[in-house]
Image (cartoon, rainbow over all chains, first blue to last red; front, side):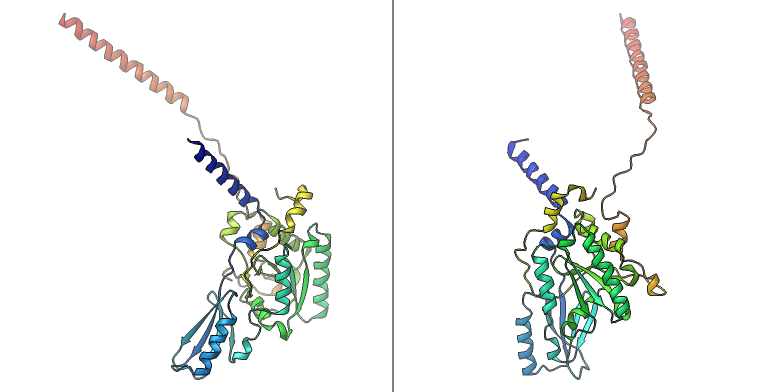
Length: 263
Length: 72
């Protein structure tokens, strides 16, 4: 075996070993492309000039977001409308172009993305149900658990009311992470990481110290091929190129406290 | 999506997300291969093969020597 070949094997082994020690949250942010949503403009046979102009503007506005736009002819359609799909699921239907305002960005999504790009482990998003007693109880558990976690400083907790009109698209996407969520009026905890991936939520009594710590364990674990091949969660629609994120803060915590490394 | 939870009676009995149960049960990492002891038959096989080779060699040599002597 010549020297070049030996060197190649050593370099390859080094890359592989690095890949396997990258933490789940960091690996997903650096490598996992967000899944594309599909926005369909469903219309009858003729397409008016104003609709063509609107759609051209829409196509420009959707650039850099994880979404594709298509115009679809469906016979029998009297009034045109828009449909938002994620994989094979219908997320929302819009009868008016104006309803698509803030579809790909909103103030809360901007805040969450900024935290993820700054190297935070994840963002815990607490979706309030509107039942004050239940909401406060869940929030107490979250705050207590995050504060006592060695990773607490790199896990921002944010709250969102289910009736917030400014975040209507975001709430709709969160409630479509699983098919039954929109029918459950309970507080929900979404772990958001990577390029805006929302994990299937913890809800009601599932919001417990044990489960939140398991979520933190999941995100701070070495990214095994099992996780890479079958990433959980759903990508939220967001306008970002996800370029040049800051180094993951989890690594400095683990370097300072090797006892926290997963066995 | 695509990993939706199963049908359940009430929120109380709603199953936990799969990523969470996998993490709890240690299924997100490769399990080390379980090594099982197997019966070792290499010694009797080795003896049998050796005996067979010795016997075949003796038979071959005997026949060849006898033939040589018969000719002479």
